Image 1 (cartoon, rainbow, N blue to C red):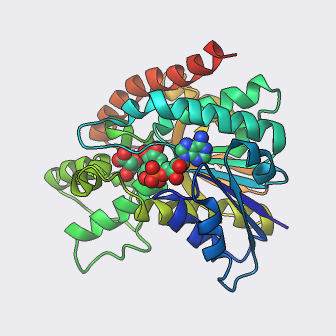
Image 2 (cartoon, helix red, strand yellow):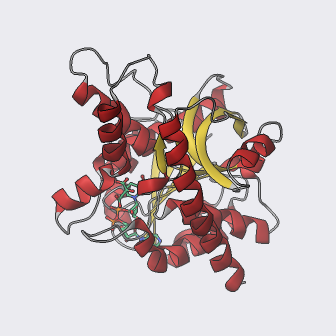
Image 3 (cartoon, rainbow, N blue to C red):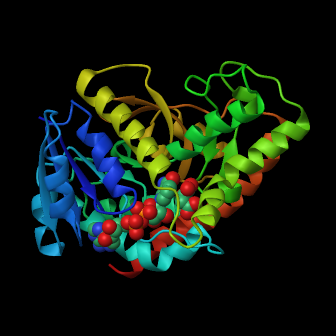
Length: 330
Ligand SMILES: NC(=O)C1=CN([C@@H]2O[C@H](COP(=O)(O)OP(=O)(O)OC[C@H]3O[C@@H](n4cnc5c(N)ncnc54)[C@H](O)[C@@H]3O)[C@@H](O)[C@H]2O)C=CC1
Ligand SMILES: O=C([O-])CC(=O)C(=O)O
C-alpha cells in the first residue's frame, strides 16, 4: 500500500502531475485535493487502467480525509507568478496556504514524505519544517523542496548549446542553493558526463538556468508559470522518493532543498561552508526513510564560488522569513 495525496490537484501543475502519478504503478491510492474541480479531475483519471484507486476531496472540510494514511504528500497549491513578479512576491498568499496544509498534514499524516512545489520554495519549505516542529512531529529526513525543474532545465539547456554531442536524458548538472534566480547555483564544473565549456558559455548557461522560470512566465504572458515541465519534474522526484522508500533501492540521487540536519554525519560540515544556513539544495541520496545522505558541495570553480556566496546571503533572509511567519502565527 502506498498512498499519495496531491494538494492543489486541479491546478496547472496539479492536473498533469496527477496524470503522471496515476501512471506510477507503485502508487495504490491517489487522493486528489483542491478547493475547486477535484471531483472532475479524479473521475477523469480514475478511468486509466493502472493499479491506483483515485479519490477526490473538495474544500477544507474534506482535507483530513485526503491526508489520512498518506505516505507521501505533494503540494503544488497556491498562486503562480505573472510577468514582473518575483517568486518572493507570492509569499503573502502562498505562505498561509502552505502553513495551513502543513498543519493538517502534521495532524493527519505526520510520517508522510512532504514534497513542496509551491513558491517561494526557499521560504515554504522552512514553513513546513517549522509547523511540523511546533507540533512535535518534525523529521528533517522527510521534508523536501522540489528543485528538480532546475536540474531538468539544465540538462536540456546544455543540449541546446552542445547539439549532437550530449544526451539530455543522461546529462546531469548538480544544482545547489535554492530555487529563485541568484540562489540557483548550477555546478557546470561537475557536469556528468564531463563536458568542457568556454567561460562565455558557462555564464550564458548559468543565467539561462537561473532564469528559466522567467522565460516561461514571459511566454505565458499573464497565464501563469511552468506547469507541464514542472509536472514532469515533480513526478520524477516523487518517483525517486517512492522507489527508494518502497524497494530499498540505493544510489538514487536527486538535488533537493532540505534541512541539513537530515544528515547527522555530513550536515554540520556542509553548514559550516554556507554560513550556518539550515536549509540548502544539494544532491541527496534517498533511502527508505527519505534523506539517506546529503552530498557535500565538493570542489567548484572560482566563478561557482562567487555565485554560491550570492546565493547564501539571499537564502538567509528567505529561510528566516518562513520561520518568522510560522512563529508569529503560533
Ligand atoms: N518548485 C518549482 O520548481 C515550481 C513551483 N511552481 C509553483 O507552484 C504553484 C502552483 O502553480 P500552478 O499549478 O501553475 O498554479 P494554479 O493557479 O494553476 O493552480 C494552483 C491550484 O492550487 C489550488 N489551491 C489554492 N489554494 C489552495 C488550498 N488552500 N488548498 C488546496 N488547493 C489550493 C487552486 O485551486 C489551484 O487549483 C505556484 O506557487 C508556482 O509558483 C511552479 C513551477 C515550478
Ligand atoms: O518561475 C516560476 O515562478 C515558477 C518556477 O518556480 C519555475 O518555473 O522555476
